[in-house]
Amino acid sequence: MTSVPRLPAIPRTLNALGRAAARLGIRPGSLDPDSLEAAAREQTGLSDFGEDPYRDGLDRLTNALEAEADLSALGRFITRGDLVRLLGNRLQLTDWHARNPEIGVRPVRSPIFIVGQGRTGTTILHELLALDPANRVPQTWEAEFPFPPPERAEYERDPRIAQSQAEIDRSESLIPDFKRMHRMGAQLPQECVRITAAAFKSAIFTAQWRIPSYTRWLLRDADMASAYAYHRKTLQLLEWRCPGERWILKSPGHLWCPEAVLAAYPDARLIQTHRDPLRILSSLSSLEVVLRKLTSDAISAEEIAREWSEWLTLAYERSVNFREKANLPDSQVIDLQFQEFIADPLAVVRRIYERFDLELRPEIEERMRDYILSNPSDRDGAHRHRLEDTGLDIDEERAKVARYQKYFDVPTETTSA
Image (cartoon, rainbow, N blue to C red; front, side):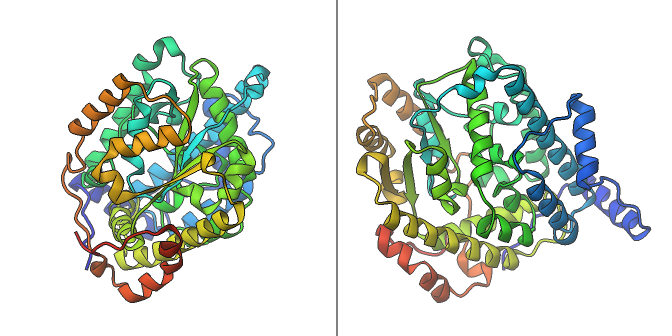
């Protein structure tokens, strides 16, 4: 049985007071979409949220949060703040593009997308590729606080870096186990799900909260074109005064909609990372138990594992369908196995540069080598997890992913570590 962590004493007390208030019919922290939009307008002094159809996603998300997420008092406070910030970012992105139309005509040429599922080495790969100055990545601080757009001359000492790091430190103080599972930092590369969150079509919400109705709509029915249009507008803004030769982008969310990625960026190049799906399921389920504890006291590790079994299986099936149909040339895609990457990360990086006809300078490779030595996978402690603790039937789970493993020749690993 997977254990659920406890929050520190102060937030536990706050949540207990919140439960008492709820019994009296008091629920502070409104998640009503109109209230959220009004708060964003007040904070920014702006009123235009843009033309793309974001409101359907916002309505579905807030309905699911109220009906399904079982938010704690702390969770409601955090959630309202996050949603108001996202709406404020929408307002500001629309305003910056309207006042500076040259931003919107900037081409985003041949971006490279890392599209593997979580727990397949995508984070450290993204960090390594970010060490090459030719590669532009969205750092966490600028993804969270993109306005005004970053300037090249001040990029490494922007005051928003400290603001972002302070927020990360506060979160880690509440769920300290999380940093053993996923490294965070203001100046580390951030995932695309943080960008598309402001389009209210993002798998980041599924990671944060129990919202099955929203997730079902997002992964099965939502038209992701508007999310990637917002994504492009954000990249154009971020690189306006702080350009690079190419974007290196990453998110497991891309695996659910690869056709939408290539529709938005036809010249995109894809790095798909692979690992035994049952190891991914075990690790992600363990991570989700810790992450969701930040906003809810009602955590079922077994339910989380069942949810992610369904969603991950869908991603694997879609990835095979997409690759069979798209028939991408070798110059546009590369497949990487987790075990090969862990065994020799630099050899894998060299393969990527060779496949995409990029120059890997010796001093950059040396920088990557030093980074690997300085950042072992267990730097913040080992992440232990076992699929046997999820309540899932291992044989049934293996059968679900057999087609994916066969198509991509993904080796089977032990189900515990």
